Image (cartoon, rainbow, N blue to C red; front, side):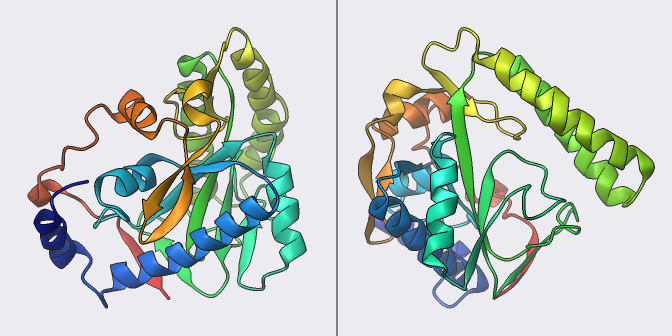
Length: 264
């Protein structure tokens, strides 16, 4: 982890105690503890990912300017996770998917808090049924083709912009079954050919960087905000594959905090 004085300076600058960002992070921490409890109770392996894992390894918790949490799990385990959350029946949360929110276009899910509101400044979330604080629960499956994933990213990005710009337009109604009923399922099948242990987020997703199964399972543990959460088998190898020197802190003067309106 980074030097304690550097960490204190970053905390003071970006997320001091009592600030809106820090209160948002603490709400996300409670949601992450809920995910951890559900998954451990049901033998569902998950792991901190992306910026959340960087935060654990570099800062021992949230990256001071970060305002989201990312976890990953195998796509084959995601239905069990959904069922487990439903059995718990916690009135604070819902797992948002394409099944319960028609404007949610992605193959992964989000654990949403039902007592808050997050409005993205770009407006791309404006049509969603659930818009509370969230944790991305990304699903991982064998995949050999980064090009296919990038194409899927472009397609779903275009679809999302069209739906927000022209809600109810005929082209949106025609495009949805073609993309999600034919194109993306075929791309997923093709992408599995020759994967050989290479894993990616299930399409459609905005992330195409590869993971290696050997780096993911069996899961390990890391410290995050004073708690122990699950992590990839090789957190350092996982992060270096995707980000390179992830321990290097970017220039604080060039850091852009995610733009959103948050009501807790």
